[in-house]
Length: 126
Image (cartoon, rainbow, N blue to C red; front, side):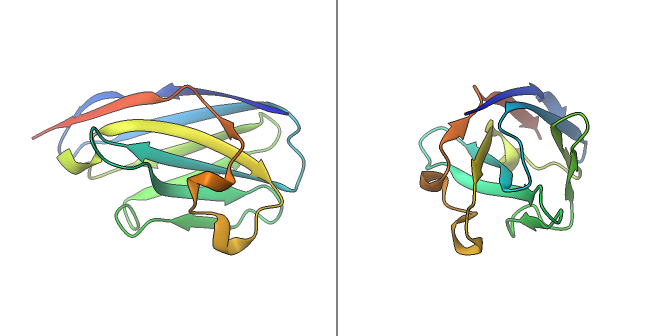
């Protein structure tokens, strides 16, 4: 079992930055993959970014690549998503997700994650 709690988010202007944090508790060994997904009103939940505890490999959706950075702190059991150059299209509820032993091809599939945070709203104004 893994418990996830998000923090951060809020209101930002286009071109600004936001920092989202996700604290994990429970089973957080090296097999864990932690990810961020987002869901805008009327749209499906989409992958944003992920990091594997074992090896620290990171992955990004094309929509945020180059302007977002995901980092993990194993000692604090925390993952942080720094988003820069925000766009109105980034407006969504952002969810932290985690699961163990995911294969690479499954990292972007929300159906493969068993553990989810409660979500945090990000609103970007133009």
